[in-house]
Length: 90
Image (tube, rainbow, N blue to C red; front, side, top):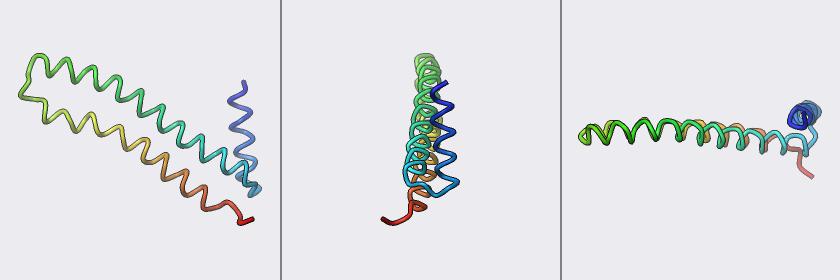
């Protein structure tokens, strides 16, 4: 229940131009991207290790699948950076 309140407060602050709400939204963007990346890499990494145990020659092809979830956190960082640019100067 508390997460919904935080997200609602961030959305309200971002809509009104409140610096605290925008900063909170930027932090949530990075946090969501990091958690999503960790979850994806955990499942992909365990699957890759199973394949590499049986076919070591496939290891170089599978590195791409391990690096692909990093885009999630990169997009979260870009979204946060764009939000921070909207914070009004003091």
